[in-house]
Length: 64
Image (cartoon, rainbow, N blue to C red; front, top):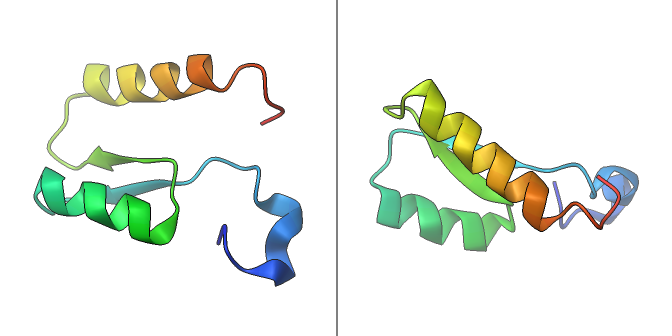
């Protein structure tokens, strides 16, 4: 999504991968896909929330 010029208008929308792949593989996929991060299917809701909040804090100066 983030690399397709046809949809560049929405490239500012955060994209997280959601998968049960091993986390090291997910990290590689994030880089390959230029996603903003990942959420593992086995994570508890607290871990999901923490990941999203951390992302939002790091990018709060940018328009999301």
